Structure formats: structure tokens, C-alpha cells
Length: 196
Image (cartoon, rainbow, N blue to C red):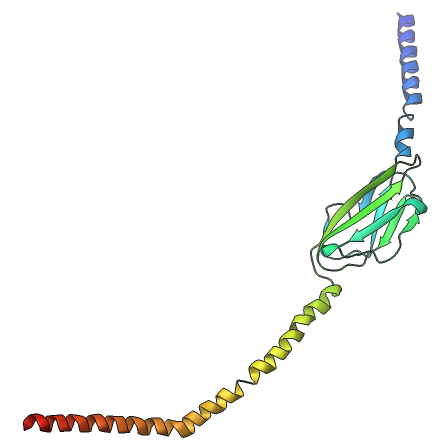
């Protein structure tokens, strides 16, 4: 009985040893194919404040010569504030925010085996940035000329109204009196004619 337990235990030790010895082997080909392991901001994030930089983290150290990172914002406007910097498995790109909306970070790099890896992360800025200030101040500038043009005609009608009240108002009153007098005179003549 003791021998059987000892043999079973030795068999399990051998099986576990073989599994442990071959377990790292599948990881070697996977390491040859680099991949994105994380980002800041994360994919799908919604941000009220713009980050200063965008960070991509990879499974293996990316090579500067074969790594490209682009950042585009709404209306396909470039939003990278400079060239990417490399630190171990991390690539950082300065961020130059524009209008609120969707931003897309695309990356392309070559793995150790030469296989090209590409992908993207997306995040959304939910609020405007100082970059929108010029376009926001532009409508008041265009509205400013409209104000003088609408203000210029208004004094003229006001003056006309003042003239109407002061000068032509009496003419209307006098005209009304003349018309009433004519109507009254016409009625009197008709009554006299009817009596005859």
C-alpha cells in the first residue's frame, strides 16, 4: 500500500514537473507578437477635462524606428502636441485638445518577428476647450456690425414719429374736422330738400 502511494506521488510530481517545464513555451511566440495592454485615457472613456498626454502600454518594448502614433479629433483635426516619447513598454504623446467630441488614437508598430501590429483607442471630451474660444468670440464680432445697422434705422423712424406727432398730427385732426363738417352739411341739405 505504501509503495503504491509513493509511486502515485512520484507520477504526479513528474507530471507537474513536465507541465511546469513546458508552460512558459506558449508565451514565447505570444511575446514575439506585441500588443496593447492598456492606455491612459482608457478606450471608450468620457472626459470632462482634457489630459496633458496620452499613454499607450504594450506587452513588449516598442521600437522608436517602427512605431507610429497619431491623434485626431473632431473633423479629423490633428491633436498630437508633439512627437511620441518612449520609456520601456510605454509610449507617451503630448495631447493638444481642440473641440469637444470624439478623439481617436491610432498606433502602428512592428513586433520582433516583423509582424505589423495596429489598432486604436477612442475617447470623448465632453466639454469645450480654450481652443474653441476664437470661434466662440467670432459670432459676437459678426453680430456687432448688425447692431449698428439695426440701430441706425431706428433713430430715423423715431424722428419721423416725433414729426408725425408734432406736425402732421394737426393735419390729420383738421382733415377729420373738414370731413365731418362736409358730412354734416350734406345731411342738412338732404333734409331741407326732403321738406320741400
